[in-house]
Image (cartoon, rainbow, N blue to C red; front, side, top):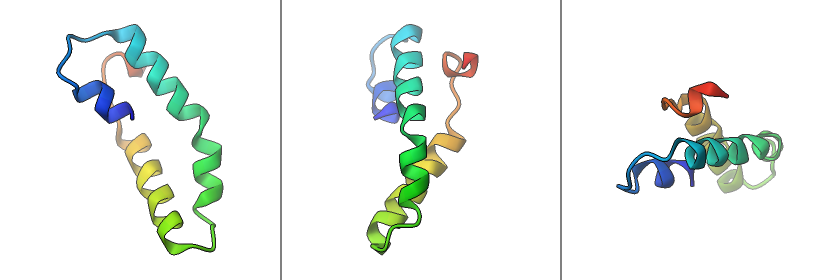
Length: 64
């Protein structure tokens, strides 16, 4: 979701981007728990999400 907002092609909207970033971060504990799910597909998706969160950088989100 965050990546789609950042790459949608609209002019930068730092407040919207920051709000989206914070929304994604608020779900991080759930993603952390899902890395231990019994379903390997769920585990992989959670790991991918955490990697995307950890590697994401943008000027507006660096203020978090």
